[in-house]
Each structure stands twice: as C-alpha cells, then as structure tokens.
Amino acid sequence: MFLIPSDWYQIKKTTNRGRGVFARHDIVAGTVIGDYLGTIMDPKKENEARDGLYTMVGGTTYDILGNPDTEGIHLINHSCANNCDLYPYQGHVLYFASRKIFQGEEITVNYWLYAPGEEATTCNMHVCHCEARNCTGTMHHAIAQFDPLETLWKKNFGVWYQKNIGPYQTKLLPLADYPRSIGKDYPNIYDLYASETKPSLKQSDTQLPPISELRKRIRETGQRLAFPKLGLTVFGIEKGMALVIK
Image (cartoon, rainbow, N blue to C red; front, top):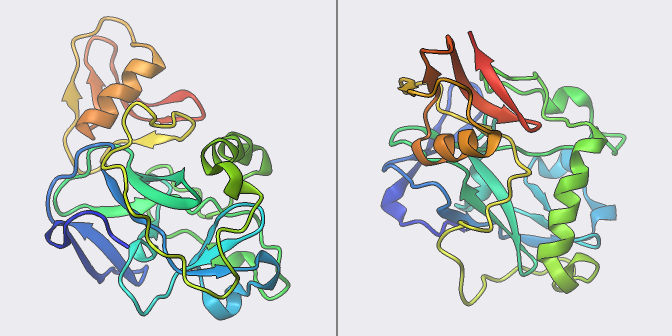
C-alpha cells in the first residue's frame, strides 16, 4: 500500500526489470512511501519459484507475500544504489525515502536477500540488473551484513518479532495510523547512495567531513558531494565508509 499521494508516483515498464515505480514529484528524505501489505505466510511454506520475488520478511514466524496483480510498494524494484530503505513498525514493514528522491527517478530499495534456501530457487533468479556504479551483479548479501538489520527488527517489531501478527493465509490489514516521516529514528545502519544523474554539489571543506556529516548532506540533497580542494567526490556511504571518485 502506498502512503504517498497517488499523483506522487507512477508505475510503468522498465527496460530490463519489468514494472517499476517512478517519482512524479521530488520526495523529501525520510518520507514514508508505503506499507508492505499482502498475505501472512508461513516461512516454511514459501515457494519463490511459484510466487516470485514478492515476499517480505516479517518477524521470525511470518512473512508477507505481496500480490503482483495489485498496486503497492511490492512493485518497487531492487537496486544496489537504492534510494529507499526498510523500517519495521508495529509488526509491519514500511518503506521510506533514505535520501531526497527526484522527480522522474525510479524509486528503489535493497531486497536484502540471503543465498537461496529452496531447492527450486537458484542464484541466477537473483541476478541484479540495476546498472548502478556500485552494482554487485547479485541481490545477495553476506550473512554477517544481516546482524545490524536483525537488531533493528528485534527492537522495532516488539512482540511481533517472535509472534504471528495474524493467522497464516489471511490478509495483513493496514494500521490505523502511520508516521509520515522517519526522521530522528532514521536507522544509520543502512548504506546510502546519491543520485547518479544529478550534478555533484561543490563543497568548500578543506578536509573530508565525518561520515555522519557526509551522510546528512547526501540524505538531504540526494546529490554527490564534490570537494574541489581535496580532488575527490563522494557518491555514497557503504559499510560505514565514504565511496569516493577521484
């Protein structure tokens, strides 16, 4: 379910990734894009070969299967340089803008996939075609990278982390109320990437600012940070380090 106005986004075909969701207006960093709704599933009975990449991890006892025939944030594509991230909230999973998203830009998220655990699911089903500068060619992550995410899940899901949010095979219903923005609670555990199409912003610093400040500037502007006095440009923050172009 989208939580931004219907005239803020458009669903249309992409060149190599099926349908995608595109911004029709600039979207401020922190804006809650939507809630991942669908069917409450028993993780032991999932079948990606049958259902496709439409399953979102809930707590330890349930997942959420989006319906590709309905409109919702489950249609947002994966990217290695995503501009949205996940935020667990009262047993639900919200998508929020991790940085400023520009009009015309595709809205993307990192799918955070483990290596396949089902016999019918193969690695070639998880090839990434995002074509970002930092694209790894796969949607998989090393197991160690999930540790900070699991900590966030445990903290924010509360009782639902180890308890079903509802009976299996029933619909996850919308919450009565949602936050409009993820601001002070923005989880810095996530990597952050600037737009690859917008021009770099010139910075006057004579030394590279701390990671927290770089993250703040990229998040608010959505643009790469050029430091002429240092002869380098920062286009993202990954694993707590600045990604630099010289």
